[in-house]
Length: 449
Image (cartoon, rainbow, N blue to C red):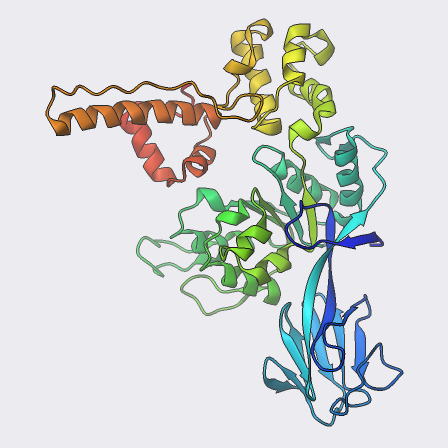
C-alpha cells in the first residue's frame, strides 16, 4: 500500500486521514532523541557501518539485533551479540516487541514508538463506495483511501460524530474485502451492560457465572473468517481493554469460564465518536489498544462540512416516495441547505421520512426537526415548565414532579433517537433494561413521539 507521507500527527490537532507507522527511538545512548523509521523490511541494528541503524557505542556489538515486522507484531531477534539484547529487563533471543516497549542493547536503550502519518491522496473519481455516497472532496478522498485499504486486512479506526455513517462505512469495507462472503458481526459497546460486555466479546461456558444457563459464543468467535465491527469503542470498559488487546495480539481467546484457547481469524473495524487521543491522555482508554486499533484512521466529516452532498443523499432517502430533490418545495430545500444537522446524515434521513409520511414537506421547518438543537448548534432554549403543588406533602409533590419530568425527558429522548432503544440508552447513559422499565412505567413505546 504505497501512500505518500506528508507530516507527523502530533499533539491534539484535528484528526485526518492517517496510516500508522513505527520508529525506533533512542532513549539512552549517544545522540539520545534520534529515531529511525522501520520500513517494510524492518532494520538491522549494531555499530557496524553495514547496519540499517548504526549506533556508535562500545557496549553495542557490530551486529547486535534485527527487528522485523510480522502480522503478529514486531519480531526482535538477537544475532549473537556480546552483551545481549533485553526486552523490558529480560534477556531474549527472540521475542515480539509491543508499541511503547523498550529494548536494551548493551547500555543503549531504544523504544518502539508508533506514529500516525497523515496521507496525501488524490480524491477518487467516483461518488460512491459501496452504499456510501458523496461528491464532496472530503468524501472522495475517503473513498480513495478505502479503495486501497479495504482489500487488505488492515485494522481501521473510524472517527466521527453520531450519525455520520460509521456503521455504513464499516459494512462497505467488509463488502469490498476478500472476507465479504464471511460473517459481519457488530458489537455495540454503548448498548451492552458493563457486566455483560466481556461475555458478549469472548463468549462463556455454561455455568461460568450466575445466569449462564448455556454455552454462548462471543462476537470474536462468531465472526471467524469475517469482520468484527466494534461500535462505540470509547464506551468499552477500561478493565476489558487489556483482554481485547491480548486477543487481537495473540489472535486467540478463551471463553469466560474456560481455559481452552480458540484461534481467531478476523479483521477488525472500530468506530468512536470521541477523540481517543484525548481519552488516552486522560486515562480513560489504554494507549496500547489505541495504537493496535488505529493502523488506519479515517475521520468522517459531519454533514455540515459536506453540505454539497445533501441533494445526493436526499435523493437516496426519497427513493420509493415518488419524489426527488429537485422536485421538493424550494422553501424546504433552502431550509435544509442552511441547517447545521447536529444529528448528521441520520438526522437528514429521519427528517425526510417524517416529512414525507407525516407533516408534508411544506410544513417542516428547523424548529420541528427531530433534534433539540438549533441550526447554529446551540441547544434549543424551549423549556418544559415543571411546577410543583406546594400545598401537598413533600413526598407526594416530589413524586408528581419527578413523574412529569421523566415522561417529558423520555418523550424527547425517543424523538432524538428515532425510537431506537440502544441509541437512546447510550445518549441518556443508562442501561437498556432500566430504560425499558421507565418506558413501561409511563406506558410509552419506542415509537412514541
